[in-house]
Length: 231
Image 1 (cartoon, rainbow, N blue to C red):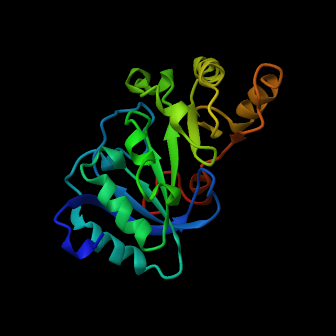
Image 2 (cartoon, rainbow, N blue to C red):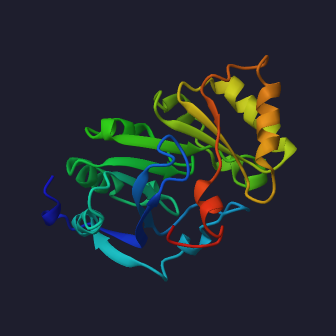
């Protein structure tokens, strides 16, 4: 695809370089492309500033690529939001970025069916980090329950845990869907201690296969102020 001929524009909240704080690329440098707009309103959302379109720059896929290239040798992109797959023509942006040689990690909230994205010609250059929203989020009823079965072995199904009910529901979902991807457990920052997740995971060893389950910290919130943007 020739990005210079693209007419589609994307509402960009911010583009910056930092370290990946979550998922299989945690600890690696990445260029973050945050798009505006989200169809969910999770109770613990830490990027609500990207919900609306007041603070945006409309950019074509080609302009986004040009900005990404300005960060030099970094070859990872984390596409996030908001909800990046909520955008019309998201496929075009993915095709442009991957055609330029980037590996694109997509942080998606679990409400958007991933089927058509997994069939894209560029799918081998995409990693999906897909949430399953638990009861404390207030948005579980909006989850697309096809997604856990669609995710590939190197993708991620992520659970953000904020209560005992969330722990129980996580085990139920894992047991029911038996996803083949990595499973990441994360705490609602300031609400659940990471050691509680480790203890709970240890208690699951006789209840489910834990070989692909990982405990993750939001690395960027430990390196910088948890409320700091652009990191």
